[in-house]
Amino acid sequence: MNYDWRWGVFLDPSLDGTRSYLQMLFVGVGWTLTLAACAWTIALLLGSLIGTLRCVSHKPLKFVATVYVEVFRNIPLLVQLFLWYFVLPEFLPGSMSTALKQLPHPWGAFCLAVLAMGCYGAARLAETLRAGIESLPRGQMLAARAMGLTEYQAYRHIILPEAFRIILPPMTSELMGTIKYSSVALTIGLLELTGQARSMADFSFHIFEAFCAATVGYLLINGAVSQGMRMLERRVAVPGLIGAAPKDAV
Image (tube, rainbow, N blue to C red; front, side):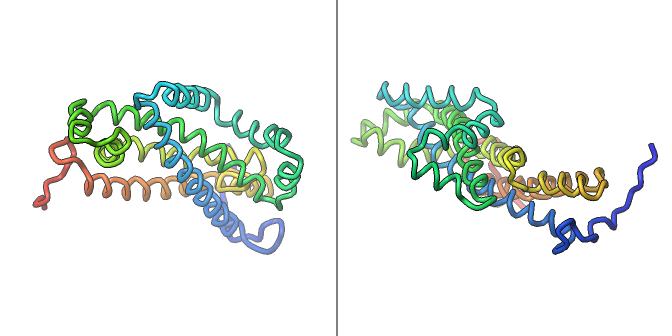
């Protein structure tokens, strides 16, 4: 294979002439991090609510939470993204639909990508949290109720704090997944890291260099997230569980 490798291409001016290809990629990193952070915030808040409702004794709320999980978890993210971007605006009231369609680029795509990824991630996180709650001994809830706590208070002060400490490792995987599948946003015109790499490849014809840089970018971002979450996991680990480091460990 005769391919002209040239790593100096990152310093060449991009098509618009205002910045280099390397600067384009850094802009893409910024959009990737912003998109993932916003989507993860929605996923964490909504997923915590849905996951808790999946375990409560109130059957109608439990049913609604189950339907949400089954719908959003079983439809591919790319299909959901297209539904949010192309279909949802048509069903909104006239003024809201017009306002959404008239958002300047790329904010319209960004907002809908955040909603799509957040709702999809919430369904996955809800199931993770449900597994964490159900892994706790039933006696904890019974003891809390015997002490006079309501079901809400028991979840708020006892069950959820322990469950979140247990599910930190799978939550880390979900967060890293959110960063990685943010790349689907390029299909609706948001030039995050993968989108910028593709744009660079199209204009410079240095495909391998562009996607090697994107690969390194994802590795560095997710590596930093993994190390940070690992430190948090060790700090808040439930005493006695595997992986909990003793306080006097060197």
